Length: 195
Image (cartoon, rainbow, N blue to C red; front, side, top):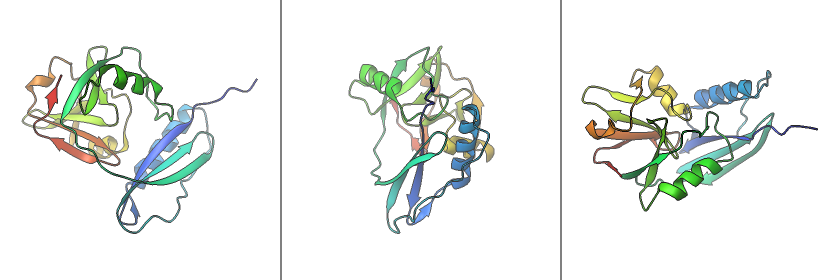
């Protein structure tokens, strides 16, 4: 009996004809495939991007690249967040199947813009992005996010972010919040609201 390995997803931003941060996306593909037991490397071969505007590239893969789609991208606004609690959720790889995250959104969203996922008392991520909080001196990000995003990794390496554990009871003390992913970049939210 053949065991089906999970399908993974990589989302890459195109801005005015240029794929953004490809080295970090290739890094995550390599890292993720090693965790699935693959030793060979697959190199991203992407189609010619649209020359004007912002688009998202959706790359579906496991052993091989299975599908590449280029889709229009319309950014959303984020201001309000609900806490979503799940001590068993695992999204350590960017799984194409987001059922566990979608169930949390259905249960906890309650009309807010997004959720902040709490696992074992610690803030981890939003449903679509890594997070950071401004403590008056530096931007801190959870030491153990659900997913190690490419933008988070890039900003950690650049010294913009500092990793630490962030308890759910600590977030009220922060002055600003940011969410970050490949499409949003580093999206600051000065007047964030948590529920």
